[in-house]
Length: 371
Image (cartoon, rainbow, N blue to C red; front, top):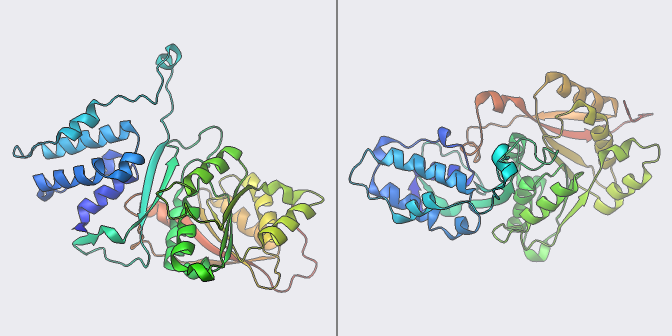
């Protein structure tokens, strides 16, 4: 089904729970057809009946829509819209303590839409929605929840996902290890690529999703296995806890065997792993062990959001001290399928660095740097 680009963008932003102050609807689209299309795709849509954004977001969205549409007195607002506005949130318990304190926002289902073979069609007047694939997750709406940043999807993951969608040869028919998988967004994209681009009879890929926090790993499992995701029936995905600090132990042989023999990756992925400089030595030591070459040369694709230049410089210098080689990869963002559904300002885009990391071929007397 083809719809106008602006309506398509609005649908995707609703699915990703983009804040309403960022939404736009041109005056030329304030008509009954737009209203009916939004109701059809967002309220009457079976997907959003099963995996909706939070009620508070849906109500904010439809209040915004009504304010935009009320300038046209000929538009008749569907009763389903008023039903959403009248609905009460039964998921949030009201108590005396909750009336006295601010409760954090409830986690929300979000759906990020992407497509195989993304094209730069920014000037196309209409979009074929049927070409798009959804990655649906239950995601935190706060920066930190339960003491971890792993319960939401970060900008670097979208950048790395777009790169892999454009270059699926990095993950198709490959054994892939993801470090710091979080709630599973990148894993859903990679697992979907492996499912869609490999004939069943020839499937050679395997995907290992890891994180250190048990709650994050549990959320990742449930998201990857949501029936609406392409990864739901994929039996070649496993999940596990991986503590990078084990690579700093005097005896790291157990971790080495796990990485080399059990997981045995061709490619290591990671997005937004370096937000705390204290994590750098453990991360680099883990990468160094995972990249030890067996019968084939391994490499890592790492996307980092450079919040502090000092932390990024520490990551690069520690990698070089451990005998790793870094190749920067330029990734144009103009045609990124996720640009309409994340906070994709020029400053943020420039801060995301994508790197290919390998072990140097000649490494005489290379010692792991643990400080």
